[in-house]
Length: 520
Ligand SMILES: [Zn+2]
Image (cartoon, rainbow, N blue to C red; front, side, top):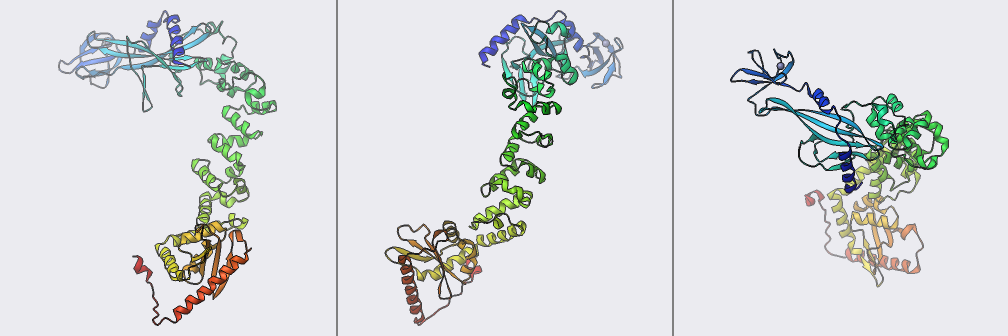
């Protein structure tokens, strides 16, 4: 609703809706208990604001009740000398006709002590209007602060109104008396099942019912015996077929009636398209988007049965896991489902270690926890500074075998990351399986790369016990060309040359690195 339209609507109401005949009597009745005995501490004089009688009594205590000797009323005592005497506040409702609509106006009465007139006086501020079919509106006298609502009483200012979509009701205050039958006669509510509704849902009163009954669907839903859906008359106020209104085939009507479903349940029923009230109940309190995510990934039932709670944290874990495996596979892997955290870590670590898990055995391990723990240890070793340094020293040691011709270059693995990267690029296990034997000097890992693209993996080669143990092209391919084989032969020749040259060196020094010392 545009502000302009709101303004026009409110001006009309201002013009049409005069305050009723006995309004002042009504207000007086509402505030007749808002009285003080004002005690003058110095003069020892007490004044009753109810009967305007003054009296002396030493037994009168401030901040306590005292029975006025004149009007015999128990009244709260305040000090005349206190600089602020608290006012009383109370809201009331006024139900009125505007054309064919029935609106509710909400007023706050503030009753305060006027020290000039020595009277309790009322100030009345209208601050809310409930307009069926349009919504609730608050005046600019209403302020919210930390969830607390406050109404400022301006007497002269012209009010402006804004739409209120919050969850406060404003319909529960004492209402100026009216005749319900007379009120609805001739309005669009004349035949709406308002009395029946407020009888069945006794927490709701006429004002609430009228708000819901403003939509045609209210009567229709009531007559269909879909009582709980009457609360969503606005959302379901769509014309046309059953399907258009509910998003379901008419076959579900009996199920909807039997379970007296409400709007939340309707949403779930629409999602599942299945007459399973137990499942709907289980999901009732959960976040709908989370339920939808689980349902769409075909793991809703097994997830609920796993004992996991549906909340943002677990959904996030599932989304991470879904980057490795389709989630519905968890249906047949309860271990992972029950230990989502560990399973997620397991998969993430396997990626970090460049394990390239593909088999069922690895993706859904039977001994999840122990494999997770082993992996963690492995990662710890890898991330250890000493290990990093050991890999570097190993590179230095083997770098004498670096060899290039006009097309290829071969060099030892320079770091842990390079091994993992090679494993990732080639789709092999060099990053994980060979790290420890490599840095311990038990094997040698070399990368052969094309000179024009040195960063791209090409051939991974293992040299051990004086010969090439393994060599692999990307994707486990062994289709080496003659050119590749010739290059490897040339390199082996070069190795021999390097080794021989070393042998004949007069001084051979074996350096033993003390890693702990060097890193520290
Ligand atoms: Zn009195």
